[in-house]
Length: 251
Image (cartoon, rainbow, N blue to C red; front, top):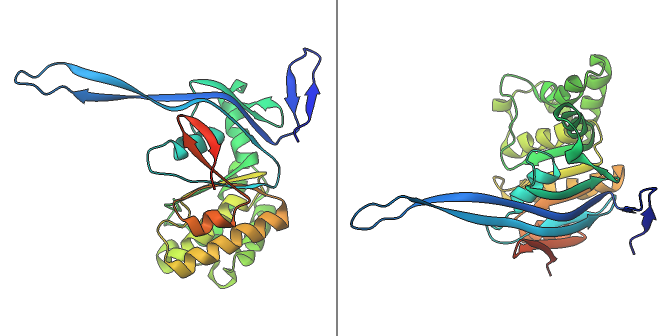
């Protein structure tokens, strides 16, 4: 049951961690109209999200499933403020994040959101420890404190013996563990993962799945994962898909 809280201007507020209302996002696909005489390009509007509503509570684990191209990654990028909606609101603890200026959005993203992608986007010239320290250094935290946090989370994800190893010295599963450690080093409220095990073998995938759930329990991290891996989706407390531009519960 969702609790509605009335503000002084009578606008409804909720107790959810994240509240999405009326979210819309479309793209323009340009195609050439091929005939005997080549005509002008035709623009087709593709509505990926259309008046989508969604509520996410603190500590929930949600899998976004479904076919490629339905807007799963687009939704994740909007929730992580990497992209903006055409219209609608994304409230985080009752604050509309897209009313922030660019500097405040960047600060919000650094402080609140952790990201793990299919491709780890680690910096090859740096060690596992140095890569994991990056979010804290970007925030401007003291280097000693950031190093301590980074070492602790790397040990937690099973990389105690790999702190000084560079990218080329790590396996694919180890690289994704470093990416996970980097995402969690500042203990974000929300972890957004886009096909996080898409490039891993089955054993490494299962280990990452287990880590997600263990860390969710340990640090009360809210987790939203885009995945085609139904084994990973089965671990989540909720599964949703996108149909007709809206978010709907999936079996």
